[in-house]
Length: 180
Image (tube, rainbow, N blue to C red; front, side, top):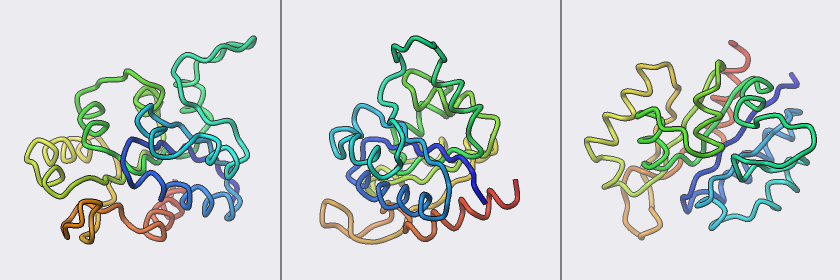
């Protein structure tokens, strides 16, 4: 099953886990296109994702090329599915509010395909009522949410906010693609 998956990576310490998700999807024969937010690039360099996916990584909404094709629309039209992992509270809030101000949020807004969001953040942020309302709003709009796990967070504290396991995320992607 050769499909095209756009993987959005946001600025969370869990961004390093997205490298293994991309690798797992590529190993299963999928084409993977990665979009990184500016903050994601502070955790993992785009070259890492380019090397693993064998594709150019989108890091900016405005890309100069001789055959102009607005990435935020073309990627959404080319893909069979969009995954955002890790998804920060900032990203979730933007999408829930209809804010599209970077390549990733614009691609998600243009997508007419399944969008899977895997939150990862501090447990206090995750349990915040505004974040929870935003997640519910996204669910109401048809987004698939992969709940974070409880476990050790980057602060050393144990709580719910840890990115779901790569196996869980890949399994949900493959199941969603199969049912699409």
